[in-house]
Amino acid sequence: MSEVSQSDETLLKTPLYDMHVAAGGKMVPFAGYLMPVQYPLGIMKEHTHTREKAGLFDVSHMGQSYMRSVDGSDPAKILEEIMPSALAVLKPGKMRYTVLLNDMGGIEDDLMVTRTFEPEGSLYVVVNAGCKAKDYEILEDRFAGRLALELLEDRALLALQGPKAEAVLAKLAPEVADLNFMEGTMVTLEGVVCWVSRCGYTGEDGYEISVPEEEAPLLAARLLRDDDVEWIGLGARDSLRLEVGLCLSGHDFDASNSPVEAGVTFAIGKKRREAGDFIGSERILAELEGGAEKSLVGILPSGRAPAREGVEIADSEGTIIGRITSGGFGPTYGGPIAMGYVPNAFSAEGTDIQLIIRGKAHPAKVAKTPFVPQRYKRKKL
Image 1: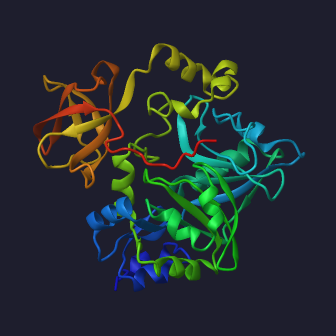
Image 2: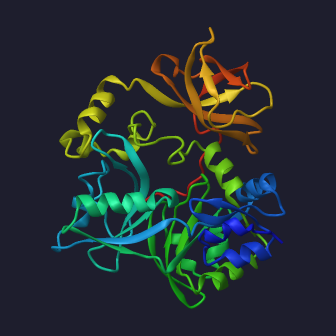
């Protein structure tokens, strides 16, 4: 059983905290919460289990909210002022990955926006745990009197990820098998009405389940009774997302990086580019046209030693040109992998670079991401 130090008592706990401790989870501070970084299975096996079967993640520390306009207009049109994605065109049950921009075209956070069925006229928005206070402050300050936020602080959030996720959840609600990637709907699971979205941040097929906090332990226990399901901690969650080239907010981008630099231009809608009607558009559109000064790239270190966040990147002559933003060992890939920013002149696949680890230069190459294929379930419509 995990032990928690006295200094950790001020940290928040999710509704599933006791389950993590009982399961032998190693609890660590993360984004103001005590969260499980791993279980007795270990990070490597947790990672592999998710790729092969189904992993259950507690992501209740994320920020969940409903957003609606005060005057009854479309709240998606309001959010489009500071988000470059085409949100107003979303139909009920459709969701979109987008980014929250600042006036300079930098990314304050990335988030998921879904058009709900109920409450009618609302959006369901999920933001990152470490940014939720800042995100809500930005929205409230900018849209005071125009946008109403209902924080869903009485709900837990579970992520069931992996190739067996559909079969596991369909035993409780067969209709989840009909959801396409990036769709959500209301579903009754074990007698409890939940919002289920077909999405996730592992690169695998899977679901996120928003459930009333008092019902979360029972639902989690029911899912864990399936032989294909295991608890998965933050350690494997990080290696899973890194292998499929997904950015971590506050690490792979911050408020100074544009969507072009961070390689998330897919979040910028075509018509939004044409209209340029969002903050920071002057910089972003200029970078789309002429290129940014630097780019987030995949990196393959030589040998077996991983390069961690903060490691300096140098050119072949030893001049420092960037740094690693995420790095570690990719269990499915079978070797060390990383991401980091380099000037565009060094961003081509196969470019030779060096990583300065403990004062010593190690050879590496720029690589394309994802390092392993993403396997979302996209059905033909």
